[in-house]
Length: 121
Image 1 (cartoon, rainbow, N blue to C red):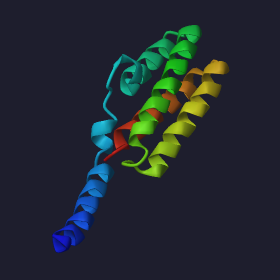
Image 2: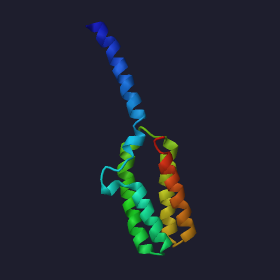
Image 3: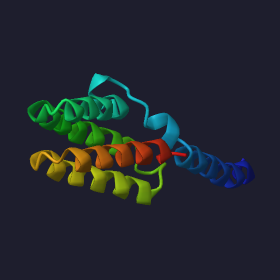
Image 4: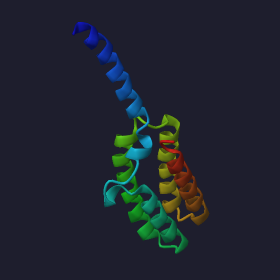
């Protein structure tokens, strides 16, 4: 019995770690309406294209809260660099929306969407 435990515990631990490390793609999927990152990015793009800056700002706040929820789930199964880049994109997007810079906001949104696609892959 002791020999089985000596072999089983490390094997189970390794399998668990492998599952956690490969779970990023699954865990980044929306689990509710308040953590849909791609949908929120699309909504902000539409608001920026229509020069609706107040709507873009309110959707940006929703994006920040959704990112905090998703970040908690994907932090162990995703590349740290992609997580940091997406966080930087959201911060720069906040500045572009505040300055009402249409081209800067669209660049940041498209880059954020690219980092979102790479997250967990």
